[in-house]
Image 1 (cartoon, one colour):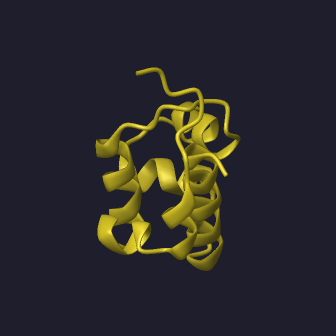
Image 2: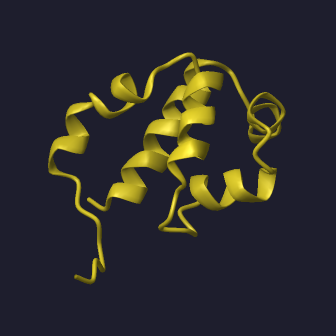
Length: 82
């Protein structure tokens, strides 16, 4: 599965667990809702690590905990050009 898809799925799971909407996540992170929506709807393949860090802070999880999910072990970045 594509890395950006897994990130979106994981964020959605954590938002559900924390009972947060995209609007509330915007308020907690300072990231504009359009960017959050692009990430959650998988309309973008690029996610700034700073934004993911802000999201993790709002969801009470560290980046290390976020990526410790076993699903990330086999994630791939699609359309990578070397």
